[in-house]
Amino acid sequence: LFNSHIWSTGQDAVAAIKKELLLLLPGINVFLDVDNLDDIGALEEYIRRSQTILFFLSRGYFRSQNCLREIRASLAGNKPIVLVQEADPDKGGGTLEDLRAECPESLQPPIFDADWHLIVWLRIDDFRLLSLKLIAEALLLCTPAYAREASLPIYLPGELLGQTLTFAAQPVVLWASPANPGAKALADELADICPSGLTVTSSAEAPESATHMLLYLNLDTWSDERLAEQVKQAREDKLKIVMAHENDPDKGGCIFARFFETTPQELIEGGLYSDLARSCFSGVHREVSLMLLAKELGATRQGASAGWTASPAAFLSAVKGITCCSSGRGDFDLVAASSRGSLSEGEARSGALSAGGGATSALG
Image (tube, rainbow, N blue to C red; front, side):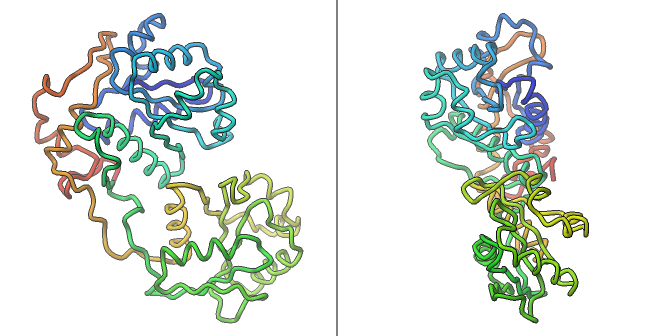
């Protein structure tokens, strides 16, 4: 795997991706310039000798001449490409539209209009674990063993997806005020994934039966003056307030700093934001957002995931097909699956992807 990125906004992320992929996929070789680059003039040769290329999309990536060299060499060599998009604006993240606008027009169709795997990179623990799993899956799908598959049933020990959460032990009555635009819709999303023991109410005022108040934070929060009074009353009544910060632009998502400008000063000074607001992301990360919010409300785990369904042998053959990039000495040679012996039992046991319940995660 060759990691293509710009230093200013991508170096820390791709270093983390390399470190954890080495745990997730024993046997993979990952090129990272700070570890493996001997000759900046040989970028095209490094690309040629790599099997799969990861484009880390962040601010400035498409303005870097060396990144453009790597992109053009990858496209010219018909290399499988995995796109990873930085999500955090403070770390150089941007929307796909913004990133596309930075990209030379001639390169936009083969990058943004092609059917490459696109994974959003999130740094918060549970979200990062899902991002890493999706990157590992995309790499496996680029190998001959799984090239015809659309997806793989991979499970990482400790991940939230695949778990069943329930409020059965301690039922919850969640109040979503109509003065808080979007709160009822988010509460209904929660009820869809955790129906057991959760009751959602959207009455004009908090009912006596309410155990929690949902405070949904997006662009429209605090637009209704009633909400501030309701939050103040809930705090006085010791009604637990659970906050959810929307990050999806299509749902009015915005940076958290905005709320220090729009929230009534009395609530800010009273410590409203001293408690953690749960982040709500879009796409495949949405379910993780909802499960973390459910756990904040008191949901507990019930049951376990079935995990990876392929045999360990099939998994290891896929790993051997992944590739090779670097020995660290500049002699980059593609390693074909047929040229390698079987992994040792110790190597197999160190694998991070769960294979039929046999291997356990170094991350877990």
